[in-house]
Length: 173
Image 1 (cartoon, rainbow, N blue to C red):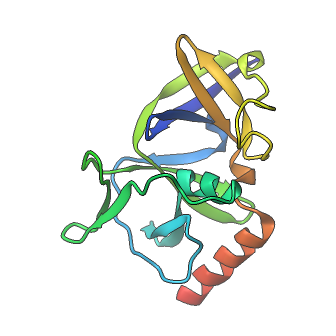
Image 2 (tube, helix red, strand yellow; image 1 turned 120 degrees about the horizontal axis):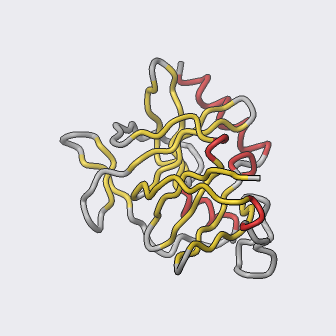
């Protein structure tokens, strides 16, 4: 059976998410920093009247691995309040997904393409890398010479993290 994936890049790595899990893609975003949020939450944004948290995938993976992120790509441009990649100064993109009852934005460096593949092409990631034991990694996909890490959005946040973010967002209203 065919499946479609939204592919994107963070740093030098390629990732993808099943298109059925993606609510929308936003090409340029405004962000508001928020104190006392988990370190992988870069801030929040207003999406058509709804406040959503913005998550850094690389920081999330670093927390899962119980280490600090190997680099801090992100900074805030105070003039335009648009979050940008510190290395190349391009505005970051956002992939909006829903986890249980909370809508979140995943910050990405670049949108790549939509892939249509046979679902059998997704291989197990078990034992391949340091994060593959976590349910957030749904597999590995190889297209030509590129490898894509398949992310499973419903496992990006633990249940207690989902509750914490929901509570914090409700406090901000």
